[in-house]
Image (tube, rainbow, N blue to C red; front, top):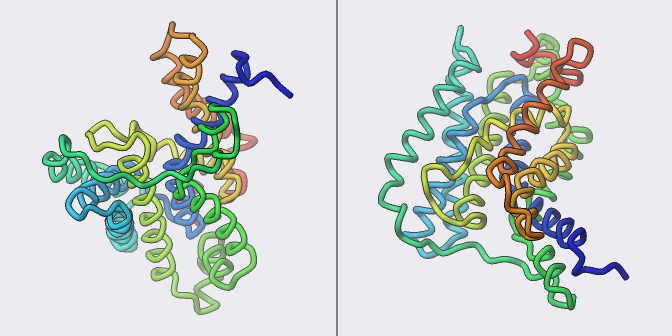
Amino acid sequence: MPDLQSPWMILLLSLASGAIRVSTPYLFVSLGECLTEKGGRVNLGLEGILVSGAMSGYAVSCLSGSPWTGVLAAALAGLLLGGLHGLVCSLPRVSDIAFGIALMLLGTGLAFFLGKPFIAPQAPMLPWLELGKWVASAQLQHVLRINVLFLAGVALAFVLQWGLRATRWGLMLRMVGDHAETARAMGYPLTRIRIAATALGGLFAGIGGAYLSLVYPGSWNEGLSSGQGLMAVALVIFARWQPLRCLWAALLFGAAGALGPALQAVGVTGGYYLYNAAPYVLTLVVMAVNCRPDRALAGAPGELSLTR
């Protein structure tokens, strides 16, 4: 039986616990972007959608007294902003990249403006699942204290992996994203499929925002997301556009985000802010490794604007 009180075990358990907590927004946003990019479209406005979802979820939870109503509101906000991106980018000569940046600014600006009255009030939080009550170790109990949104994200990753490979809608989406002309010749409605995929991707990102404000860290403020929406785009490239790989990549990014608190748990306090930069360093490393000429965008959908 390993010594659960040893510094190394405390560090590993803290990293595992932190990875689950920190990874959930990455997971939802990356799954949403994976779905969007499978249809041949890029949405760089995910940061704005994430922040808007966080504000909407927190505000509605505060006003209604129900955190689950807040999650629905966040999902709706993400659906609307994602649908807006899909509609506008379907117009002639509209750049996915340019409008994505505009959407990021719009989403964050609206969230900051509309969310000012909700910075101070405390909204009801989503409950945790105490899966470790049977364990004697307090550290293991903390690791097994999981929110239902994380479990929903894990299930969603498996469903999307299966759906993209084994269902008709998955085949249509991949065909639209890989070979638009072939999809058009087969009678698939390209514009509607891409708008639907982008809107659904925005819905997932909105739920990721609700997790930030209603679970961890569980508040609303203007610096809540810390760029996680943008980092999720790099995560999707790192995961090679595969939903299950997005799950493992999200856990990796979550562990990087939890590195600072985990080291504090074992008494390492020097360089705390440097350790907190680990997710950003990891993003740069991922982009540098995956943007080599011999590996760039391997497995990317053929119609993705990043490849053209």
